[in-house]
Length: 274
Image 1 (cartoon, one colour):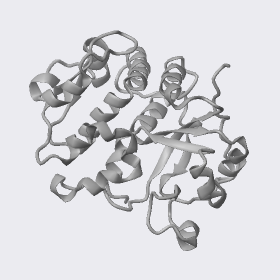
Image 2 (cartoon, helix red, strand yellow):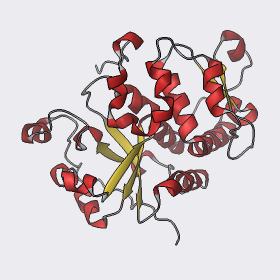
Image 3 (cartoon, helix red, strand yellow):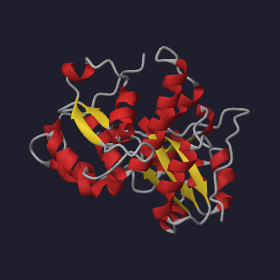
Image 4 (cartoon, helix red, strand yellow):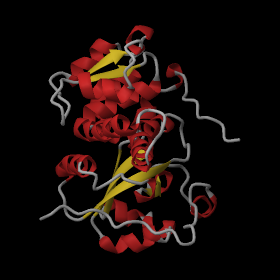
């Protein structure tokens, strides 16, 4: 039986933990992770001040997940959609990292909430649609990939990891990745833990600043995340500089570098209309 991942204690992490490339896009909030004590709700909300839900225009805020809060009977997604309230446990890595993702990507998180809430309203809380599974996989373990060199797509399709992870591709910007899933960030708290992301992929010349808005729109319009099979696996540990060592034996034998399943076909990446 696969053991459930347990994040390290706060005192077992250091500033060096958050120097890992997985946290590169979250530098404004590293202090939440490295200060001696867990940040309170007030500190989290100061970073979210003035931010609204992209599809309801409700002001977003973190609220302590207490028995009194849960007594309102609302589903987690409904509470966000109807009130803008993001239930957050104190002293909890998973929820703290989720707060960081809300601060960096509020439009994408809002789009996921919109889709989840719609399905909960439609079928209730006792069932889950394929779209909900896809959205949860991305929310927890997702990454956004920008593939500027189209010739790398066949290598990814074939799980030709040696070709995909050649340093030149990542150094020249032929391919780039941004971590989105807060569970993926949580795994990065453990040095050299093997990590595989479930990826949404853009293939084109989009500016990096455009990608979050384009991604949010594609999710909200149900052009993405309707089925888990849309998500491409990417062994993040293979990205140059993400793991040590990265020698031939690592790429040949590490568990994350799995061959493509016979018959598995990935959908084409999206491209913006230009």
